[in-house]
Structures are given as structure tokens and as C-alpha cells.
Image (cartoon, rainbow, N blue to C red; front, side, top):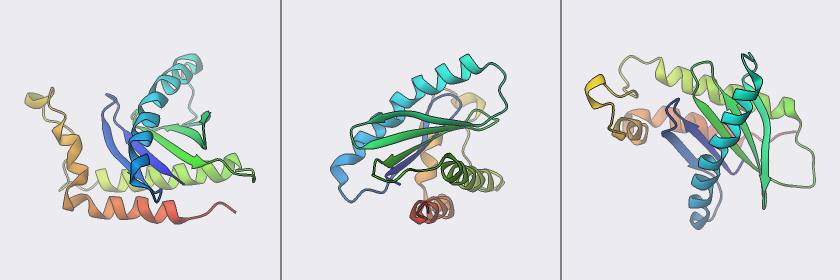
Length: 152
């Protein structure tokens, strides 16, 4: 796994985590996360009231394959996997997405952690940056653990 992005229902980045060795590629994964939003919106609007969260392969770009997932609350999860000679099965990608979704769900279920903006600060994006705070360390660690699991 090269990177994972969690994007809010209002299309604000919640967390973009890169796992590649080179830091100069981190901006590339921000770009991938944002360009994926258009493809996700197309798939969701074309699918109507589909109950399937897994959106499959969104596109391939240079050396990465980009997959999408949308939760019932419209949080988007974008996964960038390195293109390689072996085939990555959809079942394996779905399992990664389900693990990431559960990690996010567990984190937001904690009543002591704040993620959403209050009504009077609706125009302020800073609450989404709270995921970078020390209180969200367990969520980031869980995402890192999931990233280390290699598809078989």
C-alpha cells in the first residue's frame, strides 16, 4: 500500500497517510486523493441507490492503482496500491477497505474525540485537521498496521 486517504462527506481531507519511502511523493498522493473524488462522484451518481460500498478500481496512474470505497455516511476512502506484476484480487482490496472503515468507525465512536465541525464553525476546515492531533494517535497507528498487511 502506497497511501490511504479518508475524505469527509463534504470532500474535506480527514487524513491522507503515505507509506512510500520518499517524502517528495507525498504531494502526489494528495493529488490522487483529490482527483479520485470526481471518479467517485461519477460512480455514485451513475449507480443510483447502490448498497455496495466498494467502488473497485477507480483508475491507474503511472505506477499506482487507485481504488475507492464510500461509507454509508458518505466518507470516502481512497487507496493507492503500487502497480506490480502480480494480480491484486478485489476480495483482498475489499478486506483492506473494511479494516480501514472499521478503524475509522471505532475512532469516531469515541465520544471524547472531536472530528466534525460545530454549527457555528461550518466554514472552518480546521476540525478535520484534529485527526493529526495526539488524541487520534490510535487511529493513525491502526491505519499504519493495516498498511503493513501484504495481500497474499
